[in-house]
Image (cartoon, rainbow, N blue to C red; front, side, top):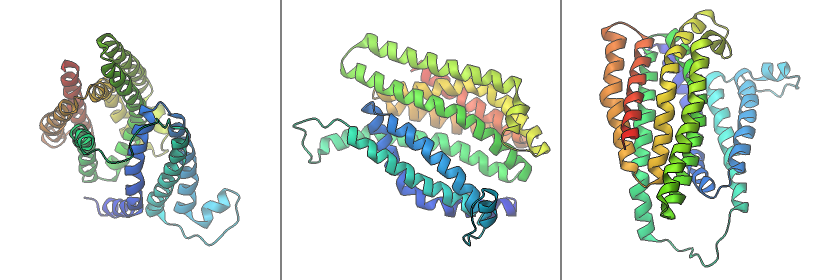
Length: 322
């Protein structure tokens, strides 16, 4: 690990620690509001939190100098650097949680519903939710592992990877939303015992998600350098990030399939299959290929990204088969 990368990573993690609790609460709130078809609070909170995060990042990173650049008076804030980035994100998380909580006021309140804890229902929720948590752990974990490996390849690799992964995450977030909406629609159709609606909802989600990701894939293939320039002005970072974005273009479609496919299975109550597909695809196929291409064939960062692409492709095929 490059020392300066390790030190910066530790500072960022310490700044982000206060966000653990609001993140967990927002996860619960988001699922409830989505199921109740009350998504406005989620959208508004995300927009407001991101705007706040941008301003707070600027101020906490640069301190009074940042305030001067924004045309504001100095108040004695010391520049916090990377730690300030983490703190700004944590503050934004609490703001987003507060706005999402306001959305509960418009949630329907069915009459005659008991407020006491139903242990059988708790057990059913755990049975369905635990594999979902393991699925996210398997998926997010492999990307986090690649981030750590990138740290050993130098600051250039880390910077280029961060640029490319931020752009890929932006497109993926759309598919996450489509997958969540598909999950709700499939779940309602399953509850109504309407098999035709189940198929229609699943197909609609796949068409929308894959169609969007196909468009982003074309953009990454045709405009990788221009997209990288949106994130940085460093020439060497742009050059390497453009290479990674071209590779990202290849996993856009399969990433869309697996994101929406997992949503379909969640709506149908088949969460174990999505976990198994993600665990096997990412850790037993994608990661070994990534390590081999990176170090065995000396492809460096590009090899790691081809490994991620391979894992995502396997997951997409497995979920489509289900």
